[in-house]
Length: 301
Image (cartoon, rainbow, N blue to C red; front, side, top):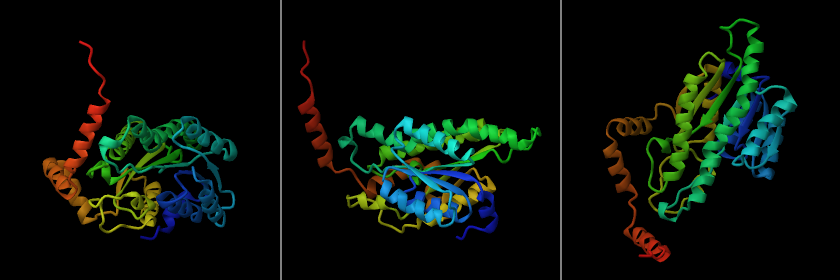
């Protein structure tokens, strides 16, 4: 899919903040926004990669910049929004894309590790959204020119989720939970932001070819066709232009459509199918029981 000229025009001259911009979907989205004429602020933890993608953005949008840091820390997440507004005087587009994978046996994940995933994958989205909303609401008021019904230019928030929240694979419990939380948050925003001029779009990628897949080491992990990150970036720009509420990428993909229908109406079938494709080995349970026994504190009677 090639982003059409009207979608590009919708972001030209706008200020866009993209989290997780150093690679994958975030990188493709930042570059697409810059090519379309947006001023892009890139943020991620890996500064060398961030500087590289920002330099490429500046070839199309010279005022683009980056802010390196950990979006999983509330102070930084809120600060990156505040710094963007302070520098450019506006924030028109917020792309909440930052995420880390967690493809591990549940018995080997600590509560601390699970919380870290939630902070980056979901709470960062919540923090940046709350930080951006006041500025976007003021922009809507200013651009309405006193006309209450004209608030279409306030701002757009795009939350990048995952199909794993719809059909959760084995060993993806924590990751899927973080994305399911994002889904619920986005769906709530659809109602709560009604009439404000601020729009929220939920983009749900299926199997996209990013570096995440190189971190999976179990034989049952997904090994089918993967789609380019640019496909998601294109849909993000179209979602901003057309103010779509939810889109799955790739769109109208037979496998994803079928999986969504089955998950909705026949959840037991999905559970059985996932368990058959990637079962939990009895050895993992035995090892977890052994660890539990070893760590159990004696009971005083």
